Image (tube, rainbow, N blue to C red; front, side):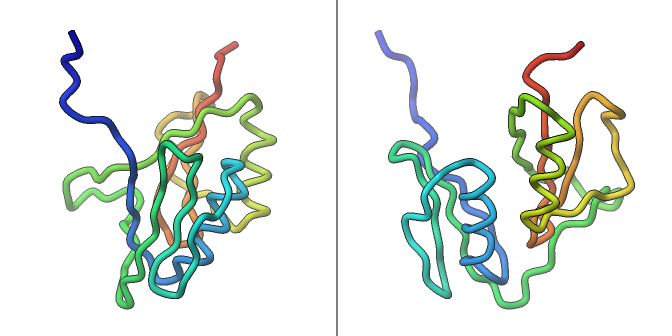
Length: 124
């Protein structure tokens, strides 16, 4: 008996430049950009998608945000933390000073300012 009520098909992120963010995540995750317009863009593996919607006055969340409730973020599994961080930076991500995971994982900000974490698939 299947007790699943729902399954995740898409996560949508607000931003000012959907095309740029879709290109960033498409390259980072190895997913094709399946839709790209000024107002909305998407990357997808055919099962799960990430959409990017244009919000002209979008302000990225603060990191860390000590004045509000925690917002969602993406955790991405990586084989080599340093190599993945370098790739993300080359694609336009930035590394904030505040790093709550120490050397265990790395928080980065995508080109629109959304935080995401690079998580090694194994810890030494």
